[in-house]
Length: 129
Image 1 (cartoon, rainbow, N blue to C red):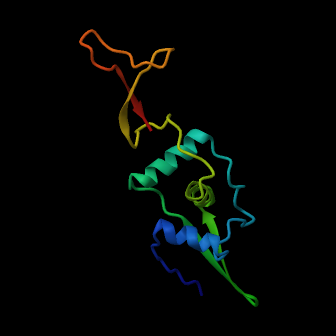
Image 2: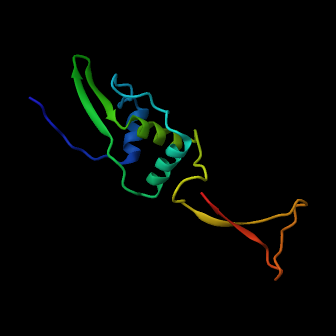
Image 3: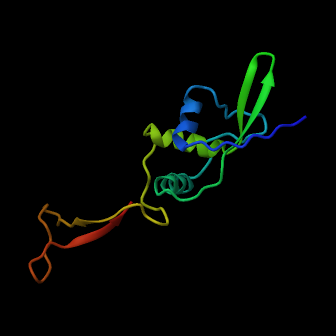
């Protein structure tokens, strides 16, 4: 008899489960984690930070004589990416589609002096991350 249990976990809970080895990413039918391009990885991390909706991570429990294994059967890349971001393995690049932060940075000339416009104001360049 199959039993289906649907639980929702916060991202931090899933990462903590993975860190405590309660959640396995090495199911035989899962692809190897860390094969996303940097742009895709950065986009996913920024999506989480912005609180946007993402696909759920599917976890399957396997009951054995030695106990219970919890396998990620859909979402291994997502768990791995979140863990890597949390532990500063990578920083989000500046090529994400919808930036998290937009700011202005003062421009300096080759001598290190601030460039001024015709009105004597410091010239600024728009930056996004």
